Image 1: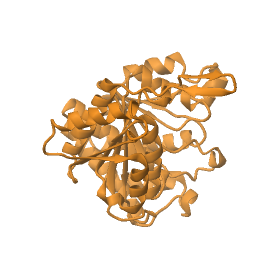
Image 2: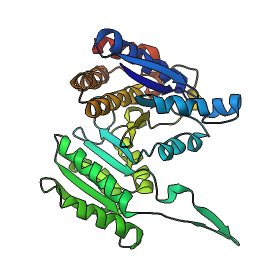
Image 3: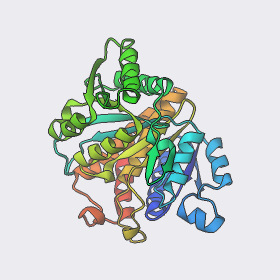
Image 4: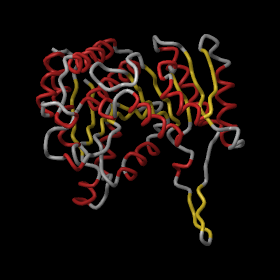
Length: 338
């Protein structure tokens, strides 16, 4: 039995959380993989009700679970996900970008992953003001760079793709900080002779994600660059509605759709739940690897296949021009799943 903590979030969060719960219950009841789900409060709603965006009770429950799923939260996102990343040392932000049928991808053979260092860079929030200016400290360390590089190479080795890692930085300008990152990745690469290694400046990478996205396999980069490039990659394959994400540490992981809370359509039950369902797929793969559980891998594959088959059929939710409600779309996924 795996215990899953589920932060239901804000805006469309509760609606797509219902979809996630339906999928998880189907897996438990029909596919022979035992899961229990505990719904938790965090975000704007928690801040309004309890006075804290990430309540202590929620944090305690997350820590006790085997893995966490998190729906999008609102304006208090930094007080939820950034805090969880730091407190649980979830140093690897993993963002796949893959072409799916009937989605407006630039090409139909894209299958890449961005491995983003998740704990430092400008996102530490080390900022201060001096007279009429402000200064932000960019912190890049060798240990953090090496461990995300190792994760990226291990990921490339597992994937049945091009077995290539592209290190993205801007060391020709930020010679100290990105110099450390580039050097660390280059040295880690020596331990993976079967993986092709290349380096690319971030501006060139941004261009090539548009020009030839099918050439990428695993991209490893720093926090800020990874944040920007991963959203670009999601749009390249059709938008954030199909974009899951993982925040992974040595002993724990959190999985989430990367889109926002979409308050403009909240309560209308028209949101596409695919990115959250695909986040479940990522969670099952992680649980399978962590626990050497073949059943998790088997079910993960079925979850992705179910989403693939539904979008291939042309079915879409109303928010992206279709005619399905969130629950109707979810029901189609479940029918394919069983």
